[in-house]
Every structure is written in structure tokens, then in C-alpha cells.
Amino acid sequence: MATYRVGIIGHTGRGNYGHDLDNVWLRIPGVDIVGVADADPTGLSKAVQRLGVTNGFADYREMLDRMQPDIVSVAPRWLDQHAAMITACADRGIHVFTEKPFCRSPAEADAIVQSCERHQVKLAIAFQTRYSPKLAIVRQLLEQGKIGDLIEIQARGKEDRRGGGEDLWVLGSHVLNLMNHFGGTPHWCHAEVRQSGRAMQIADVAEGNEGLGPLAGDIVHATFGLDNGIVGSFNSHRHAGAGSESRFGIRLLGSKGQIEMKTGLLPNAYLLADPFWSPGKSGIAWQPISSAGLGVEETRQDGGLIAGNVLACLDLLDAIEQDRHPEANMYEARTTVEMIAAVFHSHLSGNRVALPLTNRAWPLQQTT
Image 1 (cartoon, helix red, strand yellow):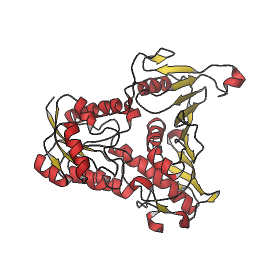
Image 2 (spheres, one colour):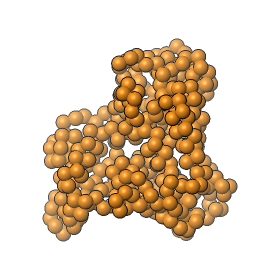
Image 3 (cartoon, one colour):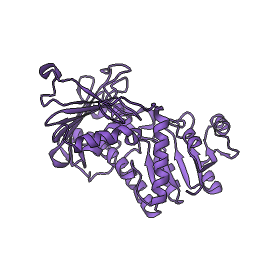
């Protein structure tokens, strides 16, 4: 494998460096971090020391032009600058590893995809669960018919202080991607967004946190039509979560049982081989799923989100070498943005909306 030149884009105070999208490259063999960009002087100084580089830049475009990296981490957690940062890389033919959420609208996602396609750029997004060794086991169990035919996918956010619209964006991106992964293409969405005990109104729209743009809603109920008649749902209620052991994750419901899975590199995952979906009725016990299989003790250590990012970066390097799309790629990232936008399009119209969306703008942007 060739040695790759890597650049880091962060923004201290506006998303920082995400979940270690900078430090992850220190764990990847065959790469050389050649520069870091951060518009905040103090943050830039700390990043230069942390990453052991000599080239720091206030302007990420200058870094791209002067250092000419092969790959760039677009690390800020806030998404309001993602589209500009990613397209600046793609327009220069630079591959990208980006933090989620992807960008602010389907229109921005379209522009990113078009630039990447035009310049033959690979893009991976930090959906760490997609690289979990447990995910392959769950797919295998589905293929073996352990829960029968998959008929429904339920997803929830963390339902903390961000519950509702913000939860849909920040945590929903992860579980909507898993919904897409297991259930296939979303074809329609029907949703309701509520605020302060009533249906969300235009007057409720305000600037969201973390660069999310115009946003509203403290409760979200959304249903999606997926492939083969599978139905997916996402629900989030503000302050309805269960604390640190939250309900954040997905549940795969089949004709003969169900699988429950959280998120992360080695998420808690269980199978219930019960067509009633009710261990209280059937007396059937949940079986743990490990990276070694069903009911087998876990032998791997969970290295956290950065370990998931290591696997994502290694997959990105292999995708570049093999000229394939990364496991969690720009097309899937665009789908999650479109699913989120569809929630608000549906609520505002009072109707089910078809996907792909014909209106590619962020729906609440048009109301402010």
C-alpha cells in the first residue's frame, strides 16, 4: 500500500475535531499527517502539538493547496461548514473522511456527490456501527432466517435534552443509516413533528444547535416505507430517555423473532427467537450476540468510537486501492439527509411524501 498524505480540518468552538477524526490517523499505518487547519488560533496551536505536525493553517483552503494531501478528515461535528469543506477537497481530487451529520440539505448532498463523482473521489462517513464486527454476525443471522422474514425496523434516538428534531439529526443519522442498511431504499415517509404539546408550527422554527440550521420539534414520529414492504420507524421524545443506558439503537422485527442492537464498535446486541416478541408470554430468553456469534462470549475489547474510526479509515484506504465505494459512503450519507428532510416535508404538507424528494431544499429554510 502506498504512503498517503493526510490533512486535518477542524474548527475549535464550532464542532472541534468531532469524535477523534484527527487523532485516528495517528493509529493508521502507511499515512503521514502533513497539515492541520483550524480557524481558531488557540485550537490550531493545540492541534499542531497534539498531531505532531509542523504545518498549521488558519484557512483550510490554503492547507489543501500548499500541502496537497491525498486524504482529508473533515472533522468538525457541526455540519454548517461540511458542504464547503468537503467540496473544497473533492474539487481538488482529495478523498474525504467526514464526521456526521453529513450536511444540511439534500441539495448540499447532491452537490457533494456530484463533485466527488466528477473528480473520482472516495468519501467515507463516520458511522462507526457500520464497521462493527457484530454487524456481520447480525446480517448472517438475518440471512439464516433466525428471526424469519424481516417485516419492521424500529429506531430511537437518545431522547435526552436534544429529543425531537435535534435528536433526529445528531443521533438519528446513525440509526437511519442502519435502517437503510438492513431495510433497503426508503420510498416514502409520513411524519408528525410536535412542539410543546401540539403540532409544530412555522412560528416554532428557530436556529438549531451545532450549526444544524432552522429547526423545531421536541417530539418526532416518522414512518418510512422500505424495500419488500418493510416498514421503518423513528421516534424521539425530549427528556424521555432512559439515562446513560438509553434506548438509542434499532430493533429488527421478524416473523419468528427480533434482534435488538445499539450503536458503536461493539454494541450490545441480542436475539429473541420468539414470534410473539414477548418473553413474558413465551418464557423465551434473549440471547446475546457477540462478534464471534450467537450465544458466544465476546472476546474482543471495545475500543470506543476511535476504534470504529480506525476501521473506517482502513476501509477508506482499501476503497481507494481497490477503486470501490467505502462501506459507509456518500450515497448512504445522502440518503440519511434525505430521510431527515422528508420528516419535515411530510409534517408541513400533512401528507406522505415520496423519496427521492423532488424538493431538494431544507424544508424549514423556506419558512424563515
